Length: 313
Image (cartoon, rainbow, N blue to C red):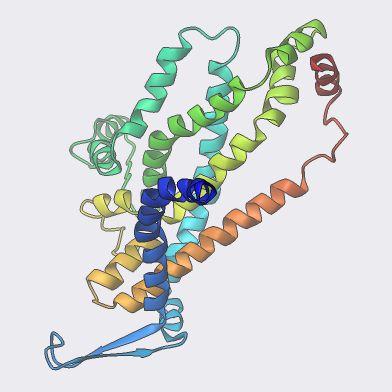
């Protein structure tokens, strides 16, 4: 009897978490996937004469993929991700290496300053930046006009990069903290061995720090890829001041519009599943690509790294 109680004890402790996990994570996914394969027909204006549901196979997916605005939004976010994610990961890596260098002054203060934008909600951050984008309010536009330059941050060719600027400003500090946490896990013996070998700061960064923080770089990149396809708040807020942003500018905006403007929840569910599938495929492709470039076990990628590793042992 005592053994039975011991066996059930972990499940009793995990029960509250498992219940919340099923209700808030698993169940919505199951419902969304089920809705994406369902067609609902409403009789009357508001369905007052009856509602019928039937299995639609892939009809909702076909309708979603036949929407040129939805396809264009995915392509737009792929371009956004290639440029913005690459720039942001490079920037947060450089900031992390600089703040963790031996010559850095007041690193704690600068870490807090860089991380602070992450604590500002996306809607508020977009409103703040819109004051720098809207003509008549933006001092940047007025300053450029004083030099005879016509700057339009909200035009069709520039608004995507204005959004990228907001996203970079918001999440660079967050990703930097993840990389700094990985940097702090590097044993001090490795740095001491590199110092004995006469390695320069540049050599330490390229031969020791960058290879050893690769897991953090991969994690932040995957999170950023997923976040790119989830972009919603920033374009929705800027939509009120930029005619270049339509109601289907991003995949999430397109699904939102389909559900709540066109009242086609089943097609919107299909769009949501497609967005999740694209995010999974891109993340999987990135992980496979980076894993295929890892050095084989037993081989050091650089002489300095090999020597410092031997010394650390």
